[in-house]
Length: 379
Length: 155
Image (cartoon, rainbow over all chains, first blue to last red; front, side):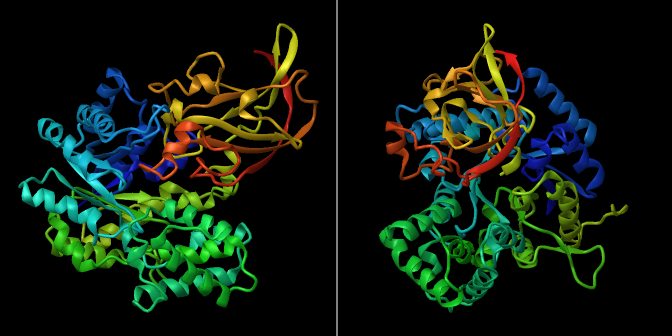
């Protein structure tokens, strides 16, 4: 397997103009031994939708100068862009194909579409993917899982049509098994009770063992953001979709039994337990041939007790996930995608996280778990 | 996201046109990890010292163009507000704000999303009411700022 970085990881440094795009590329090249992969979010890193020919030339000269490889470009779609109607699948496919042509100009091999992108849109864009020699991967993001229609329909299409141009981009958040400690700490700063954090961790463990008060599969088709807002709506109005009514009621009862006088925020904290995918490692092994590239998602790298200079994310099963991919024969990129900076952004800049340091720690772990040699270890 | 940095702390000032104070303005950044097509940007929940300033009195200055109303912004379906760029939110208020410190409650509304949502058709008819958290997925809380009024500028 090969390693790289998604510049999503540096979104905060980018926002505060502490790292330019070239600084980010240089960091991968010079301070992350064994890494050469670059992934960007087009609407974050570029002047969009057309960064201009001068930029494109500069981009390619950076890749050459720093010995880096454009691996995957992450694209979005906003169905209300035209404001007078909701975009049709054809219009979403047109936007995707424009983004694919941009990816090609910048030398990327893959385009990542959102987990919510309909498979029909990917299929409409397939001829353009063939023409441009690009692969399209749908992100599989927690609480979505590898099992279920959203992944199966892509795999079936790819196998039926003998194409490897459509596949998946697993986000390692799907191998998370408890809410991150930094997310829980932020909720507590906003006034959630510590008992709610404890309950969220307890419920996560029960659901992981299959001993929870409801079946996680019933919530795994929603995005985390949609689930949070649906649960909030349920708490305020008692309304929810039929599928979610039972898990939401069980969740509320679980919280009531453990958190004294629970507030709306406390309920939301306990609900973080249902954002875990609990996807199967063996499924990952079986699907490894359909993986376009991976998002090495993490939220907080802490030092492993008793192992100075070695780091882990206590909430995500990296060891299991990397072994599954390796056993399945995956040889592509794991691109680091740091997201936990967000859970400190209620604070001042001085109290926020150091993205550069967190990504370096993550790469220490990736190299160690993947057996990638690092002649001159950084730090 | 970036809760305390969505408004630049030294940017609050009165707007002056032909020597007359017509309102005030703030420099803002996008509350997301990416830019968006400008049309998706539907305005702000904004109160200053408890007074509400709805989107009808707001105009938005971005991409080197003069301030535009959010009705005009709605039609900017191919123009992009890039992640890097600061924009200026102007608010019509004859006489402007008094000198000194002001308490500002603030939330941006951008109807960007991860794909199709149940609210899509409703938001085609009218964007969500500002300040409800709808259309503000990355910063769903109203944020309170305490800012000093700076010297006014000729708009």
